[in-house]
Image (cartoon, rainbow, N blue to C red; front, side, top):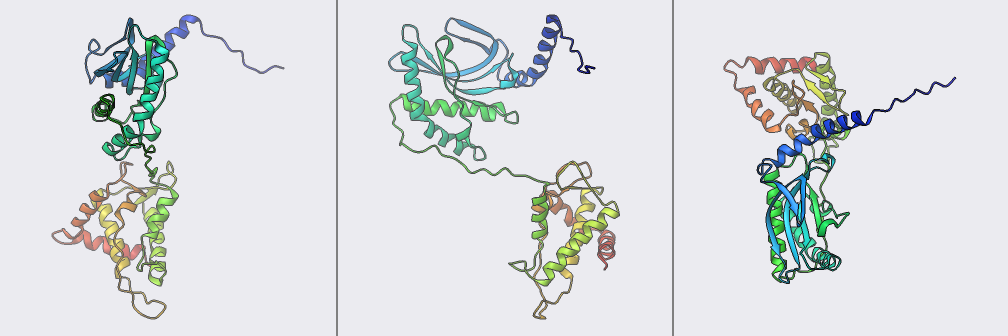
Length: 343
């Protein structure tokens, strides 16, 4: 017996309906972003002899080549029927009337080879946390006497003015110097080594534990015992519902306490660890202190609303640990910590 389900195809009308519906929904975010730069009329797009009604285009800068063959446009553009492409910006070349497009494309490509390392350097310097060496994209067409020398996708989390407009201004400036005859020093494309910073992972938890140490090497008796105490704290804090494992993450715990109380609890934990009397292997008391590793705590614990902490907030909140008029909360957490860490 054939159990393969029968597929009932949509009609052309249904396909068109859903296509238009989903494109409109997906496009709304990008269109709203583009409209921060002007009205639809102001962002009307065209190239010589061709209207582009499905595009929104912010095109404030153009430079004409000295020989009159080419126009260089520095623009931000979005195709309203292709939301998967997102917003992009860069340099579009136009071959002017009366000139051979194939020959001018050769010049555009030479221009880009001569400019890209300098341009990448300036963009990387302007945006310290971005690496443009892998963001330049090349065109896949040369339609309507146009040729994109390169384009860059505007990230969904990037501000269209702070990044997009600023970037095309820089691009215009660099190309402007080049087109006036300035020769850039030959150099390799600059690349940054940007780490993919993560939080709430197994490595982040291990990093937090490793920060609990009382000697440079961390190879001492008090460090060993303190790390054991920290694990006991985690176990008992879970039992008492002060923290709960959040299984959405690789390794994260969410507190049920307010920021103030959570900071006080952590403060009491590290007071206990620092005050703990432990003799080293050479029978010499260890007097070093271990500071609270706020930056590592941020990567392991979530607040009661399930949001990441900011270490400065918790550190500031800890000041109230000693700020009670009667010291009641300080005493509460100190006693609670002794109870939670009792052998």
